[in-house]
Image (cartoon, rainbow, N blue to C red; front, top):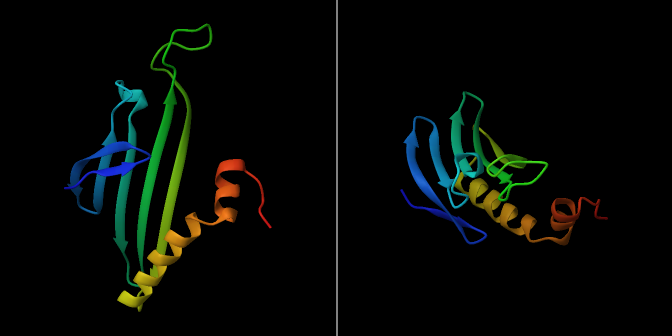
Amino acid sequence: MSNITLDTKVYNGLGYRGDGSSWRETSAGVVSGFKTIDATINYTKEKTNVRFKIVKPTIQTESSACACPGEVLRTVFVDIVVRYDKLSTPADRTSVLTDIRDLVQTTQFQEYVEHLTIAV
């Protein structure tokens, strides 16, 4: 199983399970700060669901009056979900992948995610 690198952080493959795979990035040094990626595929009679979930906790690194080292200060969750109709073709899937790649590069997407502003 290959690793995934996001923003210079290497997420090591943890292996496969019945419906998908998991990766973990451990540079925080404490379990509470480990970042994870989970990927699943769920097949039903009517559709196929593909989901990637990224969990990114931010932990306290130094002792302070507010928190101890290793304490989770905040967590960001990223969910990417694609739902394919049962009749979707390989061309449909390739098109969706291209659309996702293009979408994250747009100013509008970046404004929403980075600056929490509604882009027009």
